[in-house]
Amino acid sequence: MEAEDLASQWERLHLSKEESACFHVKQENINGDEKRDKYCMVGKALTEKGVNNEGFRITMSQIWRLEGWVTFKELGEQCFLIEFQKIRDKEKVLSGRPWFFDRHLLTMMEVDDKESIDALQFRFEPFWIQLHNLPLSVMTKGFGEQFAEAIGLVIRVDAEEDGRAWGRCLRVRVAVDLNKPLLRGKWLKLDDKQHWVAFKYERLQNFCFHCGVLNHKGKGCLRSHNAQQGDTQPSTQFGPWL
Image (tube, rainbow, N blue to C red; front, side, top):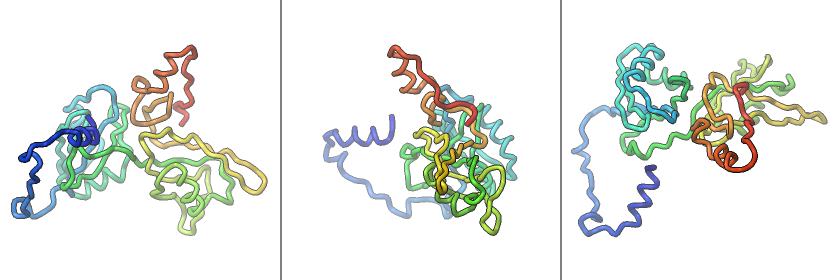
């Protein structure tokens, strides 16, 4: 059950006097001089099937090639609490996203020890996106920052020191919303001419070809299910070409 569902359920209950009394935490009861959460993050594999815990631990440890140790604690629902010995190892993993396990996206969030694990919402994951068919005059850092806002929060534009990014495509790093369909492209009008700017997502693996979202595959797609209930076969508007 989602955290917001639990919260709304508790709001409808009639609490007793003892249940309503709020317990206040004293600062001296919080142990540890150094914040442990700085070394931790939570990772969730976006898969509709279970994850082999030992296989996950071994595979990700080998892929990341860390300097120090790393531990994995299962939290349920393909979710893990991941603790690193060294901060720079954690930063290396976060900056190297997206990561995949068995072709399923591993979405990650940093930990705040003042927040509940159940309250975490895995919604965004950074991707490098290639913008193809752009006129050379707009292949710049400034244009990339403005144009890519249609996709999501722009993290970085791959450009030279002078701001130019001339080449086969313009690369932008964007925090993609896992609950929204991937944008396949966007029309651009320069002077009197229109250009179709096609998007390609680097290191993109499994996602839903029916509705284009990253947080589920075909079996959990409501669009595909609703179409199958009718007379028409569901059409796939997305594919591996993205």
